[in-house]
Length: 164
Image (cartoon, rainbow, N blue to C red; front, side):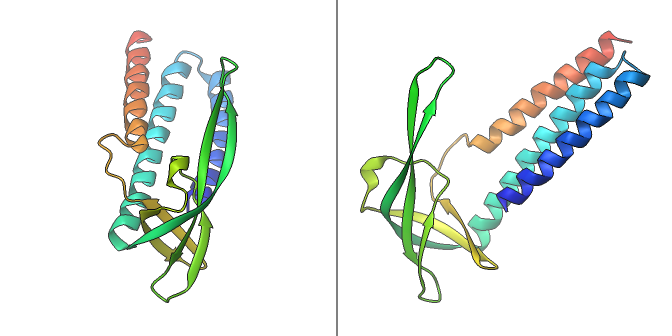
């Protein structure tokens, strides 16, 4: 589900760049406000879509425990030249049909959890399992989409009023 959303977002961004190029040739005065408005709207839209996906899995999914059997190590080089290491778990669990499922997660967790059980919620769609961790976070990463979108919309209105 997430990959489909990323593909659609990329296509939207390409179309957005083409429209901005056309707008620039027609009306340069409102280019900044239109850009910020569109990017802010897109960011808020992505926040809603990701939150909806998480809500769909958490309300309709099956809660179970999964064993962390291994990790995929990912080295990330920061802007400062430093290195951060992320560990993406490979988990094993039994679904409601008593099938043993092994799957990689796209969440980084502590390496100390090897051979431990973690709480997950999964939703089977077609032949794929959408999995989320059962964590209670006050501020999720998806709420940052709303915050960034609101800031971009503020700049859009600021530049719109400034150019009037």
